[in-house]
Amino acid sequence: MNYILMDLEWNDTYCKKLKGFVNEIVEIGAVKLDESFNEIDRFSQIVRSALTKNLSSRFKELTGITNEQMQNGIPFAEALDKYKKWVGEDTVTLTWSNSDLHTLYHNCVDFIGDPKAAEIGRYVDLQKYFQYELSLIGKNQKNQISLANAAILFGIDFESETLHRALDDSYISAAILRKCYVKEHFEKFIIDTSNSEFYERMMYKVRYINDISDPSINKEQLNINCPKCDCKANRTSAWRLRKPWFHSSFFCENCGLKFKAAIALKKFYDRVEVKKRVFEPSSRPSSQRKSIPTEKIKKSAVKTK
Ligand SMILES: [Zn+2]
Image (cartoon, rainbow, N blue to C red):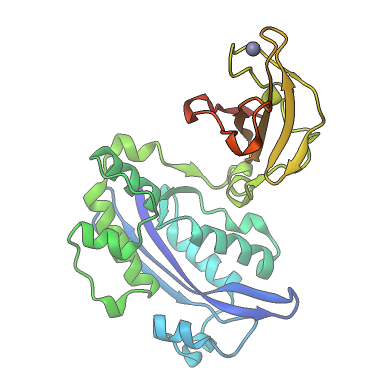
């Protein structure tokens, strides 16, 4: 099996047809490694913009790619085809974060008219895998690490001025892969981009539910237990939405407690996650009302697919 470290550079281009700015791919770069991580080949291709003759000054500054170089490039569909032929069989492709795949997907839809063109076989998000390996040695990172910072962490030398050319970024990714690779761990991160669900899942926008009758909600997710005796309480008023929370009043038949509670429902591609807040009884003045301690706040998820 070969490893492909792929990197895309894109320009923020105005598209009249879409009436907005799009990230248009201007360069595809990649390095191919054999099973022992020796470099066996490299790929670099500049793409001619379908939308503009002029790159943004920010892009030109960042990459050093000139308008002339871009205009001498080849159309995106052709470049992608050439890239896929170069990749060949029995490979796994890696990118630093999946933002390259987001852009690839949009470009395949916008410029080729075929989302399936974005299928690149087996794939690993190297940033995600890298952060997993870091977490195993007790270095949990809340935020996503940039490629440059990951390189610094591993003491990998790079010339800052050469960053943000697709091929250079691929070299740094390759160096990081060599340093953090553990076969058994890595294999669990391999996903097949040809699986029909892959891009659907990746492009899905997580959001809060604003309609309490949304069919993806499992009725049991709306149950609220009494904060005093933990029995299931009866709802005594309609749900009122104060985004993202649905509020309502409750009565516990077991111990006679009246109280208020709120729930928030977050919709993911394949599940709905619920957060619940239970408030102390409303007999007290509202200024003294407190929400109960966090350990009583229950979080649950139910698969919807
Ligand atoms: Zn009760």
